[in-house]
Amino acid sequence: MVPDVSTGSDTRGLIVYLFGPGRRDEHTDPHIVAAWDMAGAPDPGRDPTATYTRLAKRLDHHVDLRTRELGGKKPAQHVWHCPVRTAPGDRYLTNAEWAEVARRIVHATGIAPEGDEKACRWIAVRHADDHIHIMATTVRADGRRPRTHHDGQRAQAECRKIEAEFGLRRLKSGDLTAPHTPTGAERAKAERQGQTVTARHWLREQAYAVAAAVRDEVDYFTALQSLGIKVKTRIGPETGDVIGYSLAAPGDTNAAGEPVWYGGSKLAPDLSINRLRERLPDQKVADRPRHVADPAAPWRHTTTAIHVARAVLDSDDDAAAQGHLAAFGDALYNIASATTGPHRAELRSAAMAFNRARRSAIRADHQAATALRKAAKELAYASNEPGALTIALLFATMHLARAAAKWHEQRAHEQQAAAAEEAFRHLQAGYQQAAVPVLADLARRAPRAATARRYEQDVRAALPDHADRILADPTWTALTTTLAQAETAGHNPRRLLAAVGTQRELDSAEHPAEVLNWRITTQPNRRTQAARSTATSGTLSPSATPHPPATTVATRSEEHGRHR
Image (tube, rainbow, N blue to C red; front, side, top):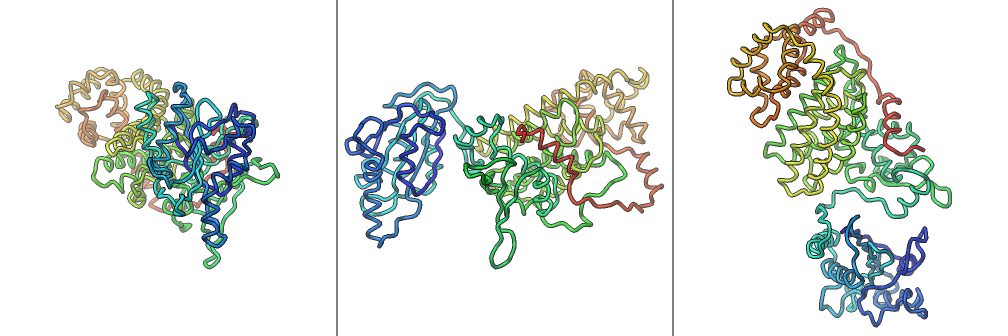
């Protein structure tokens, strides 16, 4: 059961909508199911003599009195509105049950506490099977305003109790960090236009994807405009700085043909200009991404940073952990954009799912996650996908998503934990699609039996407590090929196994050989490093790139489900 509290100033306008046919004639039999006084509330849905104006006057009676007391100034935002909707699949609620829901919510939110004869006037209108609309005028009979502080949270808490008592689907409790959900009108508009998502949803995904890739605020707006998105900034009168911004999707206009604007914070709390600046500090040209000699470096750096992030989640520093979760959300977008193959769709879905898990009421320490964010941004400029190293990165993201779900669960962040679990499932599916053929190929190219026996001795010497499980793992044969490749690259297999085996405990690993395989894959090629160091002598002079290539962002735009 989902409540959605908002305020406004047009009593009659809201009444007209509630009792009218709806924007698509979707309102059927609109009528009052509960009110401050059922005998004193004219019901235009049941009484032919009741008019919208008459009902509006009855609701606004005390607002008018208060207006006169204040010398003609009507209180701002005096109309309180709260639609309450059951979840898809829930049973049908009777009018009497919806009336009880309404009375409990106006009591819980402070609009009309039970037994308070001077409480605000309110009505609950039903015009569909699955929801009601509660509206009230927020001036009490004694002229005071109601105490509605945290009314949205209180409405949610009451809905959780109602779900349990009414046998409805139990939804996850929120913490006011969720993005605004599309309105019914926005959903209807998307359906009419044949779009799979609303303009609000599409803009939010584009903003997240662009913010993940760019290096500063100027590049953020430039990249958005390159996608055909209209950008409107709000300038401070004294400083001349940007203090806010709004976006409009291509072709999304109102009845007058004007762009429909959405403020950054209305798309998602962490897309406001201030929250963006915490993650997008101004960068000097010298600090921008550079072309590196080793094309695999961005993938290796990101994998290493993700391993660090997982360790931070196990620490007691919640602010640092929250900062790493935000950076991980950015990383998922860049991993998806830099990846090819059938698993790319799952990675995109994981990035979108994790958006709800990337923030909570805990204030993030973004500086603590600088390394992860910097490494992930390198992927926006990566020119190729380096085979097994990519799969090692997917393996790491899968385990970090599961750790994020556990971290949120321990802190009673129900919605975030569920979102992280959903992201984990997408990452797991993507990993399986990418890893299975690669592991099979590694097993097919296994070294000779004598070499495999030598590696077996190395495992028993380096990791004696885990040796039996490693050697019994179905992916052991693939690991022998990876060890052979590492040895060719200049590593000592025994020392390498000892080093990667202690990065994190292996007791909980279902397939320890698989874990070791991807840990070893991320180790640099020592022979290549030495040769490159000799050849370049540190004289690389790479060029700077102002923002990700247009094709990178444009491709991502096309794949997010809203084609314009």
